[in-house]
Length: 235
Length: 304
Image 1 (cartoon, chains in turn yellow, brown):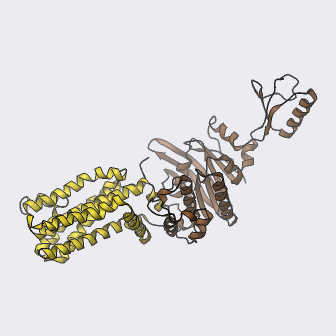
Image 2 (image 1 turned 180 degrees about the vertical axis):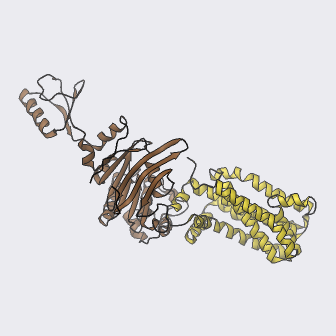
Image 3 (image 1 turned 90 degrees about the vertical axis):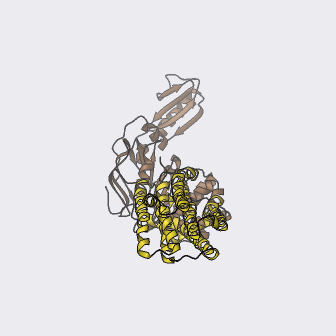
């Protein structure tokens, strides 16, 4: 698994398109949001937008594109001809993407905390970020099953990307109280609310109830992935 | 008959894609240390068969044993197996050396990568990205990963496609070295002469079934040799009746090539008949192959 992760990190850095999507674009987005954070409702809302959008770009789109590319050129099949288990193959391929994204988010949220208000419930904030990572990983595994090529990923990732982005933006603009149930049921909505409330100092018990909808979506995505994910191109 | 000395055992394998049956009730085995060539007409089902034996797809019916275990057993079986897939399946952004190290390491075996790259003539390309390799170089890279660490069983799926004659010879040299060390080889190829030259036994597939099986001499024994020549003097004095005449070209099929050729040449000499473009050929795998399209599958021939 570590050998696959190392190789994947090399490929991630060497492929300009993927590197831009996974590393450069999220950083540019973060800089813009931090610079204009006073136009939004404070650091907590900017943090929620940052986490959702950067994870969507850096994990969801990048992982979907990577899996489609590795399947299209039969690299997944090649890896499956070795001694490594399927779980280790997927973990090795996706680990660098997630680690890079978490490092990015850690730096970005730290800068946000220093330049704006500091987060009040850091453990729940961390849990919220990890839940978002898991959510987009699950969606990536599912979407990649419907994606024939890296180019096709630019289309197949749009619905989930815009849905989660819209949920986060809706909460950023209108707050968490109006139509709270609907906002929480939309993928990414409860996660955005969890990040906002963790930043503002929510107690842990209330935070856990905000975690559940996101975990439910993770389960749904993983169940769908077991049905849709393919190791070889469709013949 | 299957025995414990068989490295691969395929029993009543059937593979279906929806309503299409790609392989039907296929039974054969590969003995330890032999080179078994699985050949077939286009769409005969050999790739499906090989991929099922490799563990890349599940059989619809039947059972397969590889080195005494399930082909999908990645803990016990895979470290003993090397695979050269029909299509390489390498990541274009990795270098040649990184690719060999990665796949080699994941195979669970150890080897000297530098020595291996030298053996397949890829030393000069060791730092080149796989995406920049030619088709032949990719096949050599694929071969290097398959033989990494000297596995007990190697699957070679059309190994010499896109290779020039020198590279082919070099590849077969390495295969023969492996065989000398006891490695079992399961080969598919479109180059019949390679199967003729290197295979201990040959299985010929047609329409999802094993149509013929045996050593080269077993397979060609039932097929006549050919004497072919051109002459403007075709008459009843000819000592052997022609099988076919097309214009001035005469084809004689014979099961006694030396005897009939002697009679023909004696007659031509005595009659002062010129036999232009005279050729005498023993029967070949190609002759067996050509009959496949006109026959239905028959029971395989099982040598003792």
